[in-house]
Length: 78
Image 1: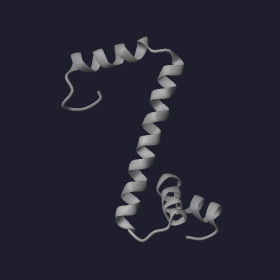
Image 2 (image 1 turned 180 degrees about the vertical axis):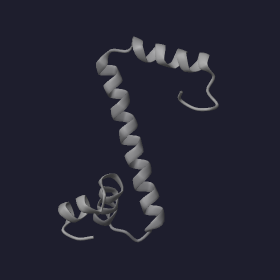
Image 3 (image 1 turned 90 degrees about the vertical axis):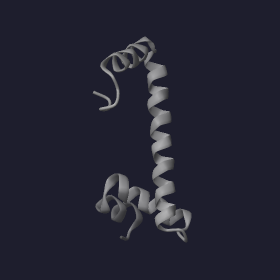
Image 4 (image 1 turned 60 degrees about the vertical axis):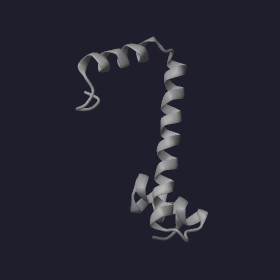
């Protein structure tokens, strides 16, 4: 189930449209969705830390997506 406000008929139609796409087309959709999610996450970080540099935004994003340990390992600090 996609969402509580999506009817079963609409949901089935959505999946039918996805099934008609080629694997390359579906990958393109996934890639675009992932890119949009990343932009939204970065925007949220910038709202929380308005004075952050691009490097600081990138570090916060790493922590958000992969956790504190990944940030420490990749950035050398917390």
